[in-house]
Structures are given as C-alpha cells and as structure tokens.
Image 1: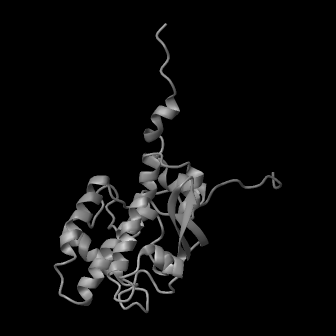
Image 2: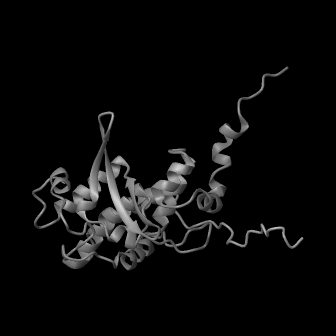
Length: 232
C-alpha cells in the first residue's frame, strides 16, 4: 500500500471568474465613448482615452492586465503574413514567461488610435512605427513610462456605468475580467481548439478546462451529441 502513489488532486477547484456578457461588454464600451471626455481636461482625459483603447485591446487579445500588457512597446509589434493576409503579432513577457500572440483584426485600429494621440509619432503610420521598431511604451501618457494606474480609473468607469459587480459571481469586475471575456467568447463561439487558446493566452489546457469547464459542454452540445438518429 505504501508504494502506491497518491493521485489525489489537492489543487484549487475551478471557480467562475467575473466577466462580461456580450450585452454588458457593448454597454460598457458605448458608455465609455462619452465618459472618457467627461473628466477634467489634461491628464485625466488622456488617461480615460488611453483606458478606453487599453481595455478594448485586452478584450481582443486575451493578454493579462498588468505587467504583461503594460510592458508592451511599439517594437514588440510585428506583422505576420500568411496566404496574403496580415496578422498583428504581439510579443509579451509576464507571469508565465514570454510568448507571441495574435490579435484579432479589430484590435489594430485601437493601436492606431493610441498612435494618433502621440505628440511625436502621430504623423507616422502603424506600419512605419513597426518597421522602425520604436522603443517606447504603447500604453503611456508621458511617452517615457508605462501608465500602470489604469485599474483605479477603470473601477470608476465600472461604477459610473453600473457594471462593477458581476451578477453570477457577486464579485467586482476588474481589468482582468477582459481576459476571462476573451477566453469565454473563444470557447462559446469555438474560435480555436482549446490547445491553441491555451498557447494564445499563456495558460495550460488543464487550467482552462478547470476554470472554464462550465462554458464548454452546453455550447458544444451539437458536437457532443452527434447527428440525430433516424426514426426507425
């Protein structure tokens, strides 16, 4: 008996993470469009404008809020081309090491919008900035340091929009909720195999299966159940 290995899993049980439904996500970004201009002029408005594009980019990439995303510089963006289609590839380095991820096409315009507000780079195209490998932080207000205080501003946005608390979990949403939003939408709409999703977001397949298993069975019902049998 002593030679039998203990196979008990003492790890944490998967729990639902606070995220957004599609309707809530739409309500948030539509509310933010006007909200970002309601603050005092100067750095407050600049931070709100940056936050607006920042959370949209999080939602379209699945990258982690914080070190992984704050550290991105323009030189970390590259184009990847396949079969005549260009894809925006982003190099990130954070909690689980470095990796390259592919942004959804819609994220490109948010990077362009941040670039257009840059006092020195605004006359350059995203192509030119990528080609020149500009060594400046993307998510910055002073163009010297990364803006790492967007979380507190985001909480104000959530409170003002009435979307702070996630009904299903009872937990307050944070910028990290966009990562959960990206993963759940990828699972629900079957955008990619789960092992590809794991590589994209920098997680393991078991972690995704554990934390997001409640999104998998019912949304894959057609695949799980197979074809309807013919009535005999």
